[in-house]
Each structure stands twice: as structure tokens, then as C-alpha cells.
Length: 389
Image 1: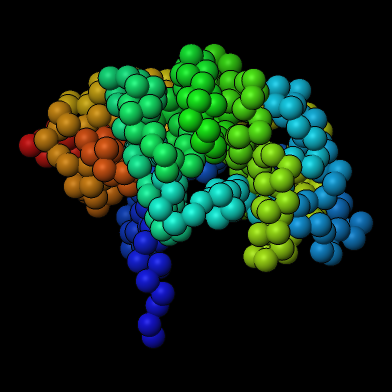
Image 2 (image 1 turned 45 degrees about the vertical axis):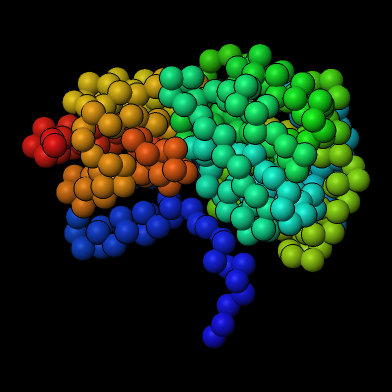
């Protein structure tokens, strides 16, 4: 079989590969602590599950509009307008099965071959993957530890050219947990207006910011019409398996993204959308409790990592990841990640899974119990004390 050449340009998400390897080791009897996958270890709140069951009984088992149920889109628009100050209504919202389609459809709708996409590196690997797949030019923006993984505005402006079409930002950030400073967000907006490029703002972790208030770039003057906000329910409501996301964008773009939905998925499952509507309209107490638990886990893993030989770790302000610098151990990132899985029983990701500038780092997810986090830290410490280079 001969495959299309474009398939050679499509990347992957290493977390799922490492998860599969860890499961294989577990099947062989080895105990593994999972710090690799970006998935809350909490169950979806009961009232959301009940809403889905009720929707099934009420007949929400048929096709719906490609852009999403009107009543659900209205609730999303009202909530994001009130919480984040984004000027929008239902016609600005497109609902998708998971948030990744917003990333894919936005680039499909906006990019021509050779257009340039600026993206954070280290950063979520699918940004670069999709840009490459579409034969656009993916241009990395180096996020540096010494700058608290904030975006460097001077570097950004130097990399903007006449072919720059899109800038991707992600705050709070995967893999570092950093959050863009308000002055950085305002500086990005000024550059976008000046150079007339669009912003894809990945705000999937916005409800998981521990310090400061999340500032959506779409709320700033003149930015709603040139920003696509990507968001969803997987992280905030522990709904990863439900596959429910959405984008908020200029209405003309929403029409095109909805047409891409028609051509690919037809629509997002209607009963799942009713569950999402219940999530937004119901009590947020469980969300707040989950975020507080993540904050405590962050403090536990941060303290433990900074006590390990050859390791130092930046304090994340959001999400549920830490991105420790491991250069002092003498190991390369991929080598240490492999050794920790095979020898110490700790599954984590090499920093290079998030781009070339992730060398010298590991990503650990603290979406696991404090007991398991302490077990992992102990195992890592034992490994480094015996196998230090």
C-alpha cells in the first residue's frame, strides 16, 4: 500500500505511546506510577453523568446541528462572556467532539501552503504536527526556563514576517504549567493588531490557574475578531472520554468550521452536549475542590523534585504538570524518561516530546494521588542515588 506523502508530516502525542508501554509493563507484573498522561484522576461529577442519562431517555440520540445545539452554544457564549469578558453570542461558538478539532479546523480554514504558524516550543506537540501536515511553515518560539516559560515579545516580533498568518498561545501552558503574564498577553495583542495575524488561544486549562486571574486575549480591544479561543470540558470537568470541546471565533470563520464539522463528524453527540450544558449550569463546587487538590499535589511534587540530586523545578501557576530541569543528573531527557519507566516504575515524558527546546527537561503530570506522587518521588530519588552519572 502506498500512502499519501502528507502522512509523513503528521506527528503524534507521545503520552499515549508511553501509557501503552507502561500498561505492557503492568501486564507483566511490574508496578508503575502513572505521571505521563494529562488526565484528571477524578470521576466526572455525578450530576453531569445523570444529565447524560436523562438526555438519552429524553431522545437526544439523533443528529444535531453541525455547529452544536443552539441552547448549548448560547450557554457557552453567556458563560465565557461573563467570566472572561469575550464579546460573543451563540453564532460565535462551534461545538466539536473534543477540543483538538478546533485546532485542526482553524488551521484548515485559515492556512494556505507556505503560510507561517508561530507556536510555543516546548509546547503541545499537535500544534506543530497539524501545521506541518497542512504544508504550512511551523516556526517555533523558544519558551525559556529563565523567563519562567513566558513568551518573549522581542523574539516574537523578530519572527513575524509577511507570511505569518497564525500565532498559537497556550496559557496555562502544557508542559510547564506557566501562565502568560498580563503584560505579555497585552503585548501579543498589540503585535497581532499591528501585523494583522490571527491568534489561536488554547485556554483548556484556564479554570486551573492557581495564582492570578486568567486573562483571555480575546477580551482585549480589537482581538475578538482575530482570536479563536479553544476550550473544552476534558480537564475542568474530568470528562476526557466524553470528547466535548468548542471554539469561540469570528462568525464568518464559525460558518467554515461548522462546514468542516459537517464534512468530518456530522455533529457532536447530542446527549454529550446536554451533559456539557448541565456542567456549566450546575454547581461548580466539585471543580473548585478538584483544583484545590491539584494545588496541594503541585506543592507536594514541587517540594519533592527540588530535593532530588541534579533536579530543579519551576513553580507552575496552572494546569497539572511540572517541568523539572534534569540537566544536573547527567542524563538526556529521553534516556532518563526511559530509565525511570523501566527501572524505577515511574511513567513520565521526555521534554523533547514537546519539541526540541524541551531537551534537559521531563514532564510529570500530578493528576494522581498524593500517595502515588510520594511513591514516585521516592523511586526517582532511589534511582538517581544509585544510577547518577
